[in-house]
Amino acid sequence: LESETEIVDYLKSELESILIESVKESNLEADHHDSFICKACFKGAKFIQDIAKLKIGVKQVKQVASVICNLALHLRKEVCVGAIDLYADSLLDGLISRYISPAFICTEIKLCQPHYTRLNHTEFAEKLLGEERVYHKYIEPSNETQTIAHVSDTHIDLKYKEGALGNCDEPLCCRVDSPPKKKLDSNSVGTFFQLNTKRNLSEEKKYGGKYGYLGDCDLPTVTLDLLFEDLMKKNPEMIFLTGDNVAHDTWKTTLEDALAATRALVYSVIRSKDANPYTYKNTIVYPVFGNHESRVVDQMDFKNSTFKEDFNEKYGEVYRPFLEHDPQAFESFKKNGFYTSKHKDTNLRVIGMNCYNCDQLNFFLIKNSTDPGDQYVWLEGVLRQAEKDNELVYIIGHITTGAWLPDCSKRFNALVDRFSHIIKGQFFGHSHKDEMKIIRRYFDTTSTSSIAFLAPSATTYGGHHPSYRLLNYNNSTMDLMDYDQYRMNLTSANAGELNWEIAYKFSDFYGFKNMSRLEDIKTKFETVGQDEDFTRKLLFEFTAWNNPTLLDKEIPLKEDDWKGFKCRTLDDGMNTVDECAGGSHSFDSNDIIQW
Figure 1 (cartoon, rainbow, N blue to C red):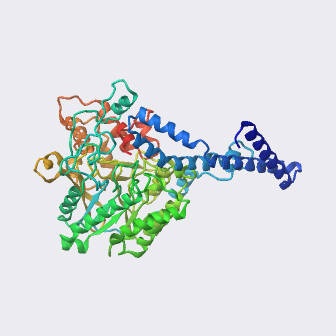
Figure 2 (figure 1 turned 120 degrees about the vertical axis):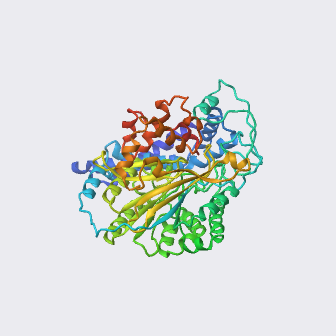
Figure 3 (figure 1 turned 180 degrees about the vertical axis):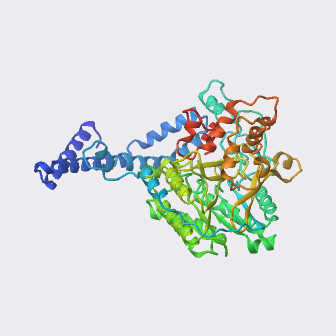
């Protein structure tokens, strides 16, 4: 079809055929008239959807989007073209499958009865929380504690090069081919965008050090190895690896690149365990996916079983050394990307979540965001069985509630509220910052059901000093007691003074050695903005030492300095961030460029 007339004639012919077929298939008695209208709508909408799937003009749309990206965001052409090529198909497929689908269109314009029912979260929560909890006999606290090492967001750069440009003209630098910055027009849109997302506009050339660079560079393997060497000296009982192993060159990352970075992480852990035979024999490592592990960041198609199983299978083999001790957990990870495992001979159960299931930027979820992969059906079943078997639970994952799709946060928060008596800890990452997420009870937001603790990143990307966390928990009750936050001062390390130091202890910040005192933690946190010393120290650690001026009392502390931080901590996905921020959603503008 070339001419406009040919296209119009073709469309008229097809639509007439649709109407004739609908008449033949329908009983046109009065009480069946709606059936005829609905069938015609379905066939017409399906025809339109099929045309849309041809993606006529998509090439031109991509070209325009690339130009806008280049001019408005001041990103290099190669970065824009690569990123748009990667994301365009999943975005378009999601939009076409959802919003140009017969079920959606014909239901929305009320020509058909609803073909799907949206989950009513209030009814779900009322039914769930109306159940009677199962309590078992009292567990006497032990005098002994064990340790958990929590490492997140390593973002290993296998191409990191000491001495390469640290402030370059791409989102990821410190590589041999990192291009120098171009001189920017102070009036350009791109410069305005970069200023408002806190990008480094300095034209002064700066270079990556031996152990890393505070800025737009990821973690070199030498620093990764040093982190695990130091961590293993503490003989942790468990290690939680909460995802994002891959460097930030997302516009050109392949699945093989992602798998290679994850292998580097696994090998680094194994090497450090080999150097500590006691640790190797006893420490169990529990890994989960981060949103960077896929070939295209954030994207996983749960409806494509071949895609999903191939992806999970390959990662399962990489993580085999950590999971093969529990065959059921290993098989679940390879099939679904989530798993559960009972820890040794204790009553502790670890639940590893798949973050793609609720990722706000997973465009495949546009089609259907209601529990793809059945993770929440599975989670509810695991929690019910754990309650019945008198087990206690730790939940680990990458992205946490409040940063998920709203439906996911609501469903998860209801489950956490219902089973809060057995959920003893939640461990996440993703933000690269040192923070926590206070989760309120579903129908009583004045009370706390759980707190998710987010570990700061091991990577230096965004200007954070490399970090890992060591938590203590009671050996019988599994209550979290305290933690030491370890951090490498990268500036000192690159100058020859390498040391992993305790940045702070949780108990020093909050004044008590028991992290299960949820209401006390929330009460203390609510003093942010009122207690200036506490606020300054908390913000300094939140940024992983990124902004030392926060400790300078000569510089006044403004509401803008702490309000967004306070709101994101209280944002559990139940619209509380809007309440906190006075009706406007507050966020760190630098997050928009975290790729």
